[in-house]
Image (tube, rainbow, N blue to C red):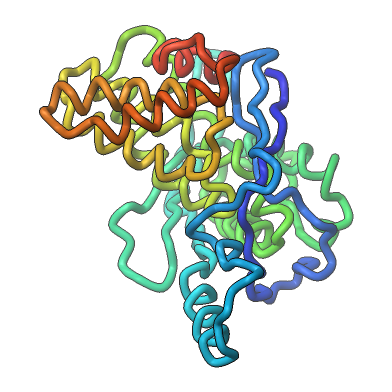
Length: 327
């Protein structure tokens, strides 16, 4: 899978999280956004130069005639709106899996948002070898940042004892907590892939096979976590949200498909050059028509974008989504 260009994304300065690991000010400037997991050779296009998100802090004009008090109130409001999302990792259980030629421990990870009741907690399972792969990939890019993070190693014997499994469960929970405390790491492609890629690969594989209900079940579980992990880059969940649209549409649930499309369009504000923008608008126009909604505004946006980006016309939304996570 080819790496995509990195379009500009809004970011904010987050409060420093205390931990024994090297913290925010120690880390180098991390990428503010994530590459899209597009098909081989198909790169995402960058946001047009000078474009800004209308909902972000940069929407304040440099020629504003605000008074000092009005400016203070404005930035106070923006600061409150752009609070970072904080996540808590718990490894609630572990079980031994016995396969024909292998035996391993599977850990169940629960990810919840702190500060309020979380009805969309994410539940995923990973093997110890998955944690090992994460550690090795992080060392390639963030060796200095994670030098104080202790990774629980293997032992020669006793890896399947109840005592050892419980000890490692607690150690892996602390490992995830320390990684997430490092700004550069929690925004990294490596951590995002560890937490979401297996489920996304499964979902897009089901989509390609026409198993829409099964794909949708997995997508609805992983998309909330994906959105939280990529809050600094709103366009990152767009392929998954568009896959949700396609599944609902092909299951003849146009209202749910339209709702998913609206979420995806909100993620693409000021990103008309994004490879999903035109196919998504085309799908939304057809859905709005089938639902009896006023589609004139969507049709107008579509025609304007087609005139502005004629080279982007080609794939339908479904043709684009089935090309994701092929490797």
